Image (cartoon, rainbow, N blue to C red; front, side, top):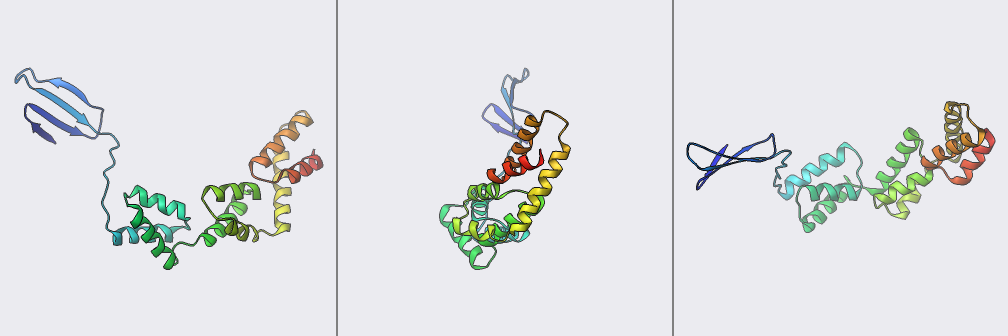
Length: 193
C-alpha cells in the first residue's frame, strides 16, 4: 500500500522495521514504514462483547478478574465492563464459587497441588476468602494425605542416590513448591529418608 503525502511516500508492509531511502530519479524522500505484530483494535458493541464473553465463559470456568481483563483488552470502558460482568453473573455464565471449586478440584487432582499453593493461586485471582474456604472443603482429608504420600514416595524414588541430607532437602523443596503444608512435608520427609 502506497500513500503519498506531499513529497513523501509511505509504504506499509507487515514484515520489517522501518527504513528511509531517497529516490535518485525524483529527489523525493521515501519512507518505508512497516509494522510488525501490529494489533488492529476491533470495536465491539455491548451486545457483541456480551456474546463474545458468554462464549469465553462457556468454554471454561472463568473468574471475574479474567473476564474484566478480557474486556479491557477489547477496549471497553469501565461502565460497560461492570454492565457486562453483571449480565454474565445474572445469566449464570460467571460464578466465582463454581470457579473456585473447579479450580481446586482440577489442580489438586491433576497437578497434585497442596492447600497452600491453591490458596495462593486463588488469592492471585482475587477470589474471596469465603469462596476459598468453600472450595477447599471439597478436598477429602484421606485423599489429601494419600496424595501427599504417593507424591512424596514417587519423588523420593526419582531422586539419585546422594547424601541423605541433600535428598531430604530436595524432597522437601519439591513438596513445598507444590504447596503442601510445611509440617506435613517435614513429617513425610523424615519418615521416608
